Image (cartoon, rainbow, N blue to C red; front, side):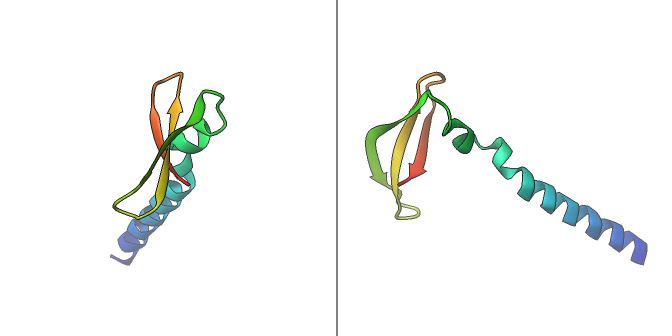
Length: 70
């Protein structure tokens, strides 16, 4: 029984570590920030959930809009 719990704990820890290290790979924000197609717009708003000022960025290649904190 102790070995089974140890294996389960190891799998959970490995999953958490992989999730933390791989998080930025699947987000479009940081990669797109270095792209020439992504430019800031004049649109700025306050996010009602966080109260932070956000600026809209536009990717002219894909048409995607990104919302980044100011």
